[in-house]
Length: 401
Image (cartoon, rainbow, N blue to C red; front, top):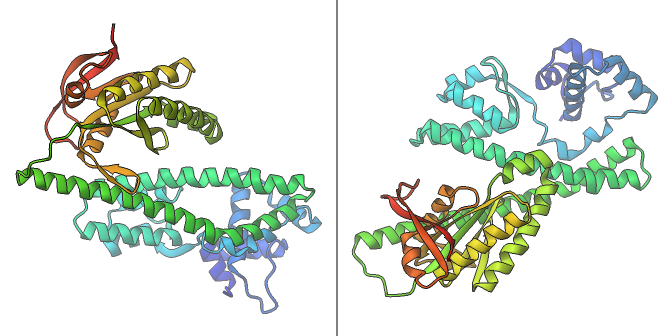
């Protein structure tokens, strides 16, 4: 794509004079026809950002002329769709055109990782598809507050993914190239070329994981709807001994990640995973899936699940890790493709949310099914749980005397 100086200025969010200044400093070099490129937009924006952060423009220009600094890596195709330019539409104009409130459009800017915009700030190219999705959700009757919640979850999840990916790239690619003897400019060019080759594969992997997570979430919702429909229709369940679903979460795991970094959090998760797996297997249980700061487990016997939960919480505390809390519920579950679904799963997760650090909370169904287990139950009363119809009697568990 060949761009004029005016188009580069518009996409970079600067005036024509600034583009001329960057060209005169030999930081950007027009083609034989005088045209510029998307890579030149990136150069102009990057230099402008450096200058605003206190870096001397003249110092940048001198370093480029002397060959100690190069922005040639910005020519890599991997950047074309990942460093977005500015449109000619302001947030105010987009709000008037789509009917999306300005406040909600501001959250779109947050979702792509930048500070809140002013009404007359220009919209980024990568914000337009997000705004279109928001427009469609509003038109379909979605509540603005619910949309905002979704955007913030997207933003937090993608931020952590991008930061972890960048940290991995820095250690496994960039530093490895420097250790192999490349200088900084050579390394920047080489890593950009590798990134261009790997980007499509990495994005397909990320999308594959997302689709898998969608399948699990949709299956869970579908099973719950079927169970509720059968319950309303009075369809009797076959008599059975209930299984138990268990959710164990680490209190403060997210804060630990933020304070010590993802590597320290990953080391903690690995150690906890080994402890949880060993304890669960000893009590005829099994970890089903890991959930970032916790784990979902299945147990054939509710009594053994309660004992295992206490052992896991104590074992984590003895190692000096952030305290764990556990929620347990007993009932029927649906097994499909290695995962468990149904109301029992959902209620167990909600009970875990209610548990305090170091606490194991269980439902009355677990108490009834765990007769003979070497534990004691202390009722804490009926509790209203989010997403669960009607209050549930919950019990705190402690070892038997």
